[in-house]
Amino acid sequence: MLQELREEVWRLHLELPKNNLVAWTSGNVSARDLATGLVVIKPSGIKYEDLRPDQMVVVDLDGKIVEGSLKPSSDTASHLYIYRHRPDVNGVVHTHSSYATAFAAVGRPIPVYLTAIADEFGVAIPCGGFALIGGEEIGKVVVEAIGASPAVLLKNHGVFTVGPTVEAALKAAVMVEDAAKTVWLALQIGQPDEISAADVAKLHHRYTHVYGQ
Image (cartoon, rainbow, N blue to C red; front, side, top):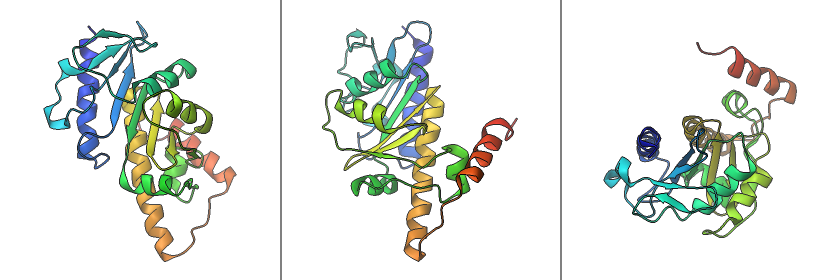
């Protein structure tokens, strides 16, 4: 079932350690199938180098396992909460990437100090409140706090990103860590200036409507 989507989700999971976004078995990627509404997500506690496409777990939006012999990620309920409340979202990524999670640890959002943040996110990267792992609570914080951004920091925890596709969500996860690292380095030198809202809007429009092929 959903073989192509399983393979895509498996392949994108391998990008997490490749981009230094996770350690050991932390983090997860999920994708929603447009035709069926079913969700493919990583099994819990399996090392990335040991993952195979056929180990990906297929669940419905209520969390019932439709196909798969392994237990799904401990964050599954939160992923499904996001999908149920954001019909525009078809991919969700969760990481504990170091620099972004450092901002999350102190409950601090990342303002638009860089054109790269304006381009990719169009707004400041917000930081939501604290929530325990295992149920829908994290998903609720994500939906409440993320606003117009494709990424949100979770206090004392890590990063969640969303996208119209799972690849878009993964790109946001890569970019939020890159931005967080640069901002952290800048803060060691001094206090950066925020880019004006008008210029952020222009930069984001150019990036999303003009840039690329």
